[in-house]
Image (cartoon, rainbow, N blue to C red; front, side, top):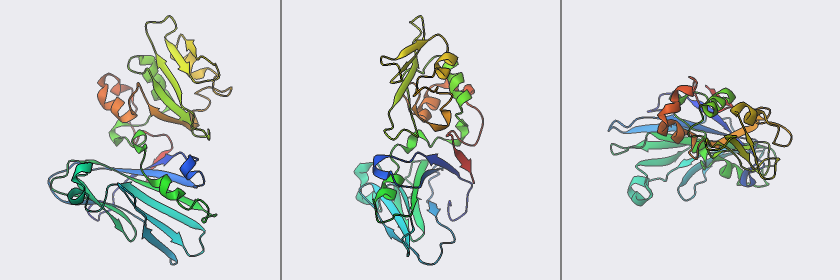
Length: 277
């Protein structure tokens, strides 16, 4: 909600299985973009129709505000978290917050002040079903927005599909040191691909089935080479978590390299597995 009015928003599905949140059922990010206009505004992420027997408590940490909700039979737990601290603009001016963040009985809220310049806010949501007593902090770790910038890109960018990334590599420039991992890899091992025009075979891949990496003449050969546990990047695209293109986070890449913007498709959002509601 913005100023207590429901808005259309985008849920971005995030990977699960990280060490600190390996037992969570699901993780999502909800980014909200609101340009400051010198007025006070509230940006809320709230649960609706909370059933009886569910109770929430503040679960905050340093630089993190969080609400965690449990039900009486301990069958489900859900955390909503975001960057910031209550009274952040007054009590913590040296931490770079130009907005306040507060916990609500049914969620979390950012408060933009007349001095606020920040335009992007991200709520993290994580929950687990069953076995609540084990690793009881993992929904908290799953919800804190570390690394969310890789997924939460301004909606105007559109969708990064396999075809979009392939077209960016066909373009060639500004793609060296592109990083990703596979969501179904419990170790989340990073892999690198890139483009070096000074070599005869201009496309390369590192940290793959080939011990010292390998090179290719075309982007198609790179993307279709079966060098990731016997499968290709194309084969495993549904599990790819793209960490950055050309050494930049995807959002920074889009805004820093205007030469490639026309290669991005029009759409509601960039991240795979994203959906609007």
